[in-house]
Image (cartoon, rainbow, N blue to C red; front, top):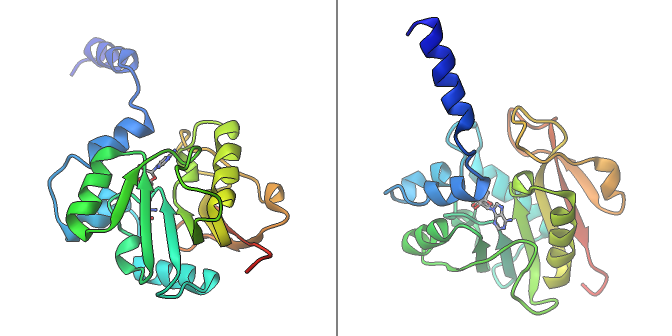
Length: 206
Ligand SMILES: C[S@@+](CC[C@H](N)C(=O)[O-])C[C@H]1O[C@@H](n2cnc3c(N)ncnc32)[C@H](O)[C@@H]1O
């Protein structure tokens, strides 16, 4: 490719409308695959995540018991959910990932938005929203989601992998200072342990 062709090709790339996160997550769920592909469906294919270890840390932090009613918001096809032993309900805005989750794991999963959760107040003992907030497009949306997640949780809520900084400009960033009334821990997996944090909150009537 000569120099003129390169510039033309770059320009035509620039003119293409950018794929939104919603479109990306919906596209990912349309690829055919099986249980072995759950990490890839949920976007972890290029990471060093040890998902059983991550889930063990979430279970420990929230003290999740087999009898607990747990909601996972932004569950995708179930990479995390496959290791949870509880009364589980999942929710995700990607219809194709929800379909895959049901096909592969047989869980109870619905399509829905993190800022508009279609469940009554305190419907779940514990609520998890892991690896999702980086895909939100505004602070207003994030605040609405926090308020919805708190509303449906009876005992405890964890929001995981909030980026302080990121290799991708499209990721929404967060500040630990904005979570002063939450328990804060470092990210759960490499190479993001120092670039991300998790926040957990317990409610008084537990
Ligand atoms: C990195 S994956 C994490 C999936 C799962 N929590 C896990 O750790 O295996 C992010 C998921 O969040 C979902 N998601 C992103 N923004 C969302 C939103 N605003 N409402 C609901 N789901 C959302 C995506 O569709 C995707 O399935």
